Length: 270
Image 1 (cartoon, rainbow, N blue to C red):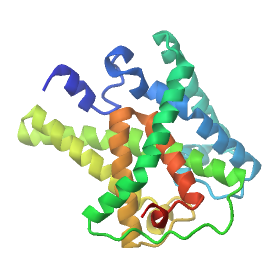
Image 2 (image 1 turned 135 degrees about the vertical axis):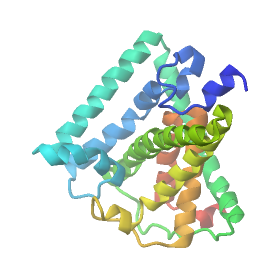
Image 3 (image 1 turned 90 degrees about the vertical axis):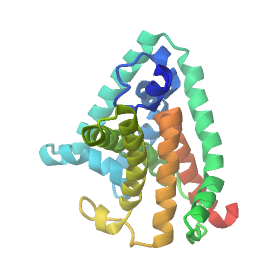
Image 4 (image 1 turned 45 degrees about the vertical axis):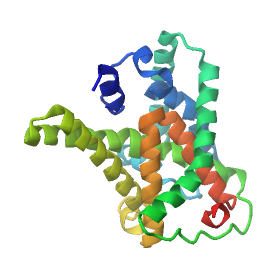
């Protein structure tokens, strides 16, 4: 394997010190965060104006440390988002980028990926020998605040499950596999597969009431078809994250969620 291929195979956590020119700037965490910032801002505005609306579990998980020691935990989360924005903007400023053009490219790639994701999930469901889940048509068009929470929640989920969890599983699995096998290249392959599959399964499990109930109200009872659907979506988003970066994966996730909320369920795709 060439040095370039090895760099492309390492997850975001391992590539953090590589230069933008070596990576392709669209795949860096800095541009990814700036690209999803509109989703995050929309989420925060909607939540501040309608605090009674259901919060995204991934956002709640990020907020837990602030819940423990701040009377207004939302300010801690927003402060963390502001720090991430300043650091990302500084990194991109140092790289001297055409930022608007690159962000538009990330959004466009996310849109294309969202269009492809539906048919891809049906193929994956067929490969797993599952029928697509029964997702009912919406009884009404979701309001702007509900839409903002829906698409903004997708950004938080990409931060938690892809940027955080996938990279963590990869690093642990790679270290363990190298210790047992003594073969660095084989260990990287094992770690990559483990991280992709493991993060997808945890992503699906994180929507269940038995998991969500540990930290927040909400979640849904287990259903095999829905679990397989979400696991397949988690795997597809993890692959997209590894290929095109966090920004594209988050916009794909957000736009696909929006399409489902507007009625583009499996029955429409079939």
